[in-house]
Amino acid sequence: MTVMTSARTSAADRPRPGLRERKKIKTRQAIRSATYALIREQGYEATTIEQIAERAEVSPSTVFRYFPTKEDIVLTDEYDPLLLEELRRRPADEPWTESVRHVVRKAAGIGAEEDPEVTRLRARLSAEVPAVRSRMIESMSVTGRLLRQAIGERTGLDPDGLEVRVFAMSLVGGLMEVYLYWAEHGYEEDLQELIDRALDVIEHGLPAGKH
Image (tube, rainbow, N blue to C red; front, side, top):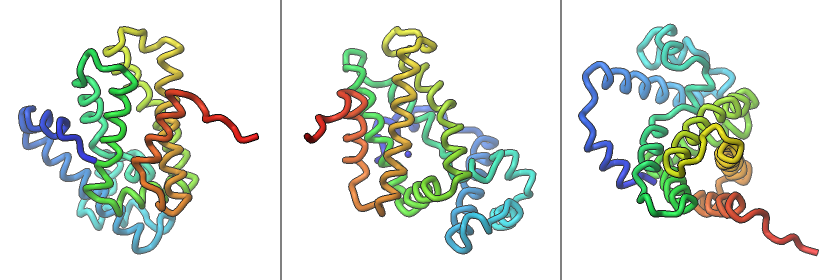
């Protein structure tokens, strides 16, 4: 999803991945890069798994081993573990809502800084391609479960409790709507500002209506 300085630091603090894991990361990145390039050239629907495999110099079975569907190639990235780690590393006495705001705002800038074109492409496909949007909604439950665990660790609340589930999915769903809104409005507004507005709604509710 501004790169977190502490996320990069924590990644550097961890032991370097072994050769096998580095090869996996390289293969995933090659598959994603091939997919984005083909979609730019010929559109989403015209891009096939066979073409992706050929461009990435792997077999179609390898593509499916890493990504069950074409939609997963578009939506999946390497950042979720870093984001959860960053959330767990926030100061214990920091209000929970501030921790969430910090991590989400920072997370939103990772792709925007490292590859803004890909960030826009992913947002556009999510807004325009029903299959991608549907898969995004399906994947929300996985992200929500990870977030619930982090919330439980930080707050002592039951991660399976109703309140935690509602909060986690409100956050995940809200961020999805931010990206759809951003794409639908031609990326004109600042993504960070949109995220702040969404977090304000989640934390404080809707603004007063006009009468």
